[in-house]
Length: 156
Length: 156
Ligand SMILES: [Mg+2]
Image (tube, rainbow over all chains, first blue to last red; front, side):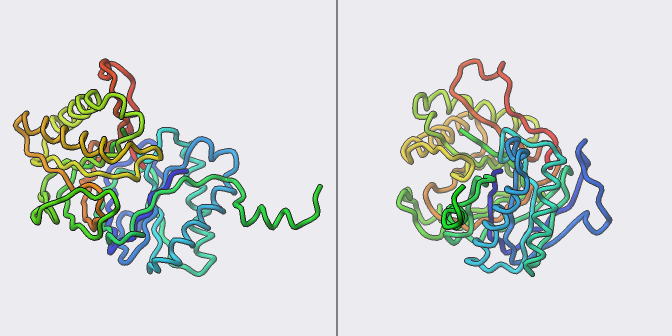
């Protein structure tokens, strides 16, 4: 999964036309305005289909780590296919985004998810400080910290 | 080279801190506002160093083709390293961007180049119609026109 994380004064969006993979949305999801937000543009990739739970875990970890530094008031998950040439199925992408939203919510943070599969008009500002634009490749692998922990346990 | 092309009501930027690869800029280049613009976010890649002239030629062709469809008043070249994991040297990137600017100018279009190597605050709007967001991989090949491109139609 490729992500582009932007620390923004605001993100505003309006859905326009549906694409063939548009998710069903309520009236209230047709537009949104999020001030002081960490906007996470996401492209879920083919290889993420192997272990979606691992992707969610590491994406949540990365988002929390970044937000611990920039301290945004809102986290916004924005589907953005343009970040990759090798996209997953829409089903995998939507599930990963929903599970990520849920996991961040459980940590007590304000989080919103922008509709998947719609053409959207949007406006965004990027604050411009050194941590206000980051790109990452998220894999499903256990990170070093977890590996170290594993190594301390019984060896098989 | 990876590009993300956004048809915008406006793009606004302000330079903040220099990075180690910041180009020298004049006072007037420190900020800019471009209404009704085709903003071309660009990441020049390692492999583009082999034939920079070929990259410029195909990038110009792609920009002109897109602008023939959306008819923006301004073309804005915006350096955006976050679109790739495999960047060229800063020198190659700046030269490709300068040569692209020059070539588009020669075609009689209004074109501006946003400074390379600076942290920047920016604001952008994306119009949201189906051609208002496109991503492309630009290669140096002669027959690119005939090759399959990684066009992204419907966007999530
Ligand atoms: Mg306008």
